[in-house]
Amino acid sequence: MAKSTAILAIETSCDETSAALVRCSGALKAPRFKILKNIVSSQIAVHRPFGGVVPNLAKREHLKNLPIVLRQILKTTNNKRQKTTIDCLAVTVGPGLEPALWTGINFAEELSKKLKKPLIGVNHMEGHLYSNWLPVRITKEPKNKETKKQLPKITFPAIALIVSGGHTILLNMKSITKWTKLGETLDDAAGEAFDKVARMLNLPYPGGPEIQKLAVKGNSNTIQFPRPMLNKKNYEFSFSGLKTSVLYYLRDHPIADLADKKQTSRTNQKKVSVVRLRPRQSADAADVAASFQQAVVDVLVKKTIRAAEEYKAKSILLCGGVSANKALRKMLHASCFMLHKKFVVPDFEFNTDNAAMIAAAAYINLLQKKKKPLPMEADGNLNI
Ligand code: KG4
Ligand code: ZN
Image 1: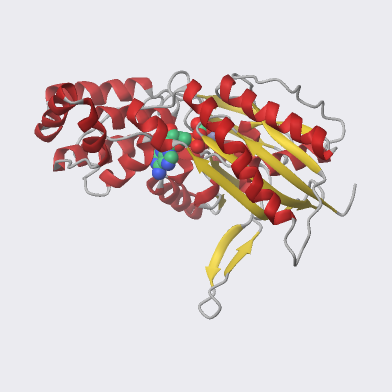
Image 2: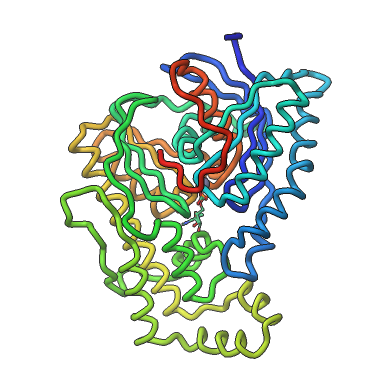
C-alpha cells in the first residue's frame, strides 16, 4: 500500500447527504486521518414539517444533493497548492433507510467506474465507532486563530457507547478491530426517544438538540422519571417505557402553553411549522425536558461505567448523534476522570452523520486484508 491513501467517501444512510475526502495513513496500531474536506448537506428543513425523516423525500434530496457535494469535494482535489489523487472510494451500505442507501451506492458505483478507482462498502455503525479516531480540536491559537488538532490516543481494552437515532450499542473492544457486543437497546434507541419526547413537547425535528436547549432552562430534579434497565445486571437498554412515562406525565400535567399550540396545529397546518420552529415553552416544559434528558444520561453513563469497570477498560469512547449532547458528554467525562479512564469523543461536527467517519472506517477495513468486503447492496438492518 502507498504511504498514504486518499479516500473519497459518501454517506446517505438517513437525512444528511455527505461527501468527504480524507488522507489516511499508518497501520492499525496508529491510524492517522487528515480531513481535507467534509461536506454535509442537511435535509432537516425538508423533513421538519413531517416531524421525522420521510424515506422517499430523503431519496429525492440525496439524488439532488449528491452531485453538488461531490463538486465541492472535487474542487479540493484540484487545489493549486496541493493536488490530491483519489486512491479509493467508500460508501455506506447499511444500516439505514434502504431507498436512501441505494442512492449513495448507485452514485458511488458510477463514480468508481468513471474514476477507475476501487469502491469499498462501509457499515454506518463502524463509521460512528471510528469517528473516535478522527483528529480533535485541542486549542485555539490566540495569535493566528488557527485551531490545533490532535489525534486521540486510544488504549485498550476500551468500552464504546454508540448512541444514534437508530441504535444504542455498548461494545467491549480488545483492539481497534476486535470487539464483542455487550448489549444494545431492546426497543427505542436513545436518539429516537429524544425525538419522540420532543414531539410530545411540540418541539421540531430532530428533537435531541431541541430538548438539550430547553433542558438548560429547566430543573432536572423536578420529575423522577424511571431509569429503565439501570439495575438489571446486563448491558441492554430500553427507552420505550421512559418515553411512555413522559407521555403519561404530560397527560396528567398538561402544559398550558403546549395545549394552545396543539389547538393551533389542528386549525391551521401552515401555521404549525412556524409555531413549531419558535416554541415558547413554559417553565414546566423545560423541567420535563431536563428531567427526561437526565434520566437518559443517567442510564447511559452508569451502564457504560459499569461495563468499563467490569472489563477493566482503559478508554471509554462515545459516538453517534446523541454524543453531541452536552449533558451526556459532561457526565461521562467526569465519571472517566474520577476513575482515571481516558474519555474520547469526536468533535461536534463528527457526532451526527458525516462522510469523514465513513472514510476512516473504510481505511480500517482496507488495512484488514483478510476481512471479507461488504456486498454493494443496501442493508437496512446491517449489524455491527
Ligand atoms: O447518528 P445520527 O446523526 O443519525 C443516525 O445514525 O441515527 O443521530 C441522529 C440522532 C437524532 O435522534 C438526534 O435527535 C440525536 O441524534 N441528537 C441528539 C443531539 N444532537 C443530535 N440527541 C441529544 N442531544 C443532542 N444534542
Ligand atoms: Zn448515524
